[in-house]
Image (cartoon, rainbow, N blue to C red; front, side, top):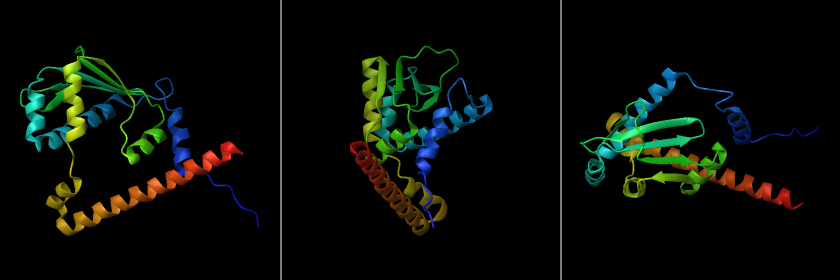
Length: 186
């Protein structure tokens, strides 16, 4: 009985995502609009739990940050309440943050290691410092939020399961990277 070669599902996903480019694929406008609305709601939920974050953001009211990765782009504006909103169409950004890593797999690996992605930054230095402070200091306690909806024990169980899956994924990616390095040497 012969062995069948298998390919990592991550490599399959990587090759699929590499085919997605502005020339090949553009998500529908309504989908991007909805994703952006939901992202703003999530970010504001997270920010509103940290008083210092909203105070810092309130000092930046009216300032626009353009974020981009591959063909996905979004402009956010700081509100007087210290939260975020989508910037009006055509708003001139004060700060541009563009993730330079094109590979979704490489981004996932870096995130699992706890690394920040490589980002090209252009624009206002003070606003960049505030955004950096937010990234470094504001954390989302997903388990705490889930406990309000489904109770403490189920939320804790889901949190443990997610942490276990992340650990298994880190181990798998580490083994895959080591195997790739071994093959490169031979």
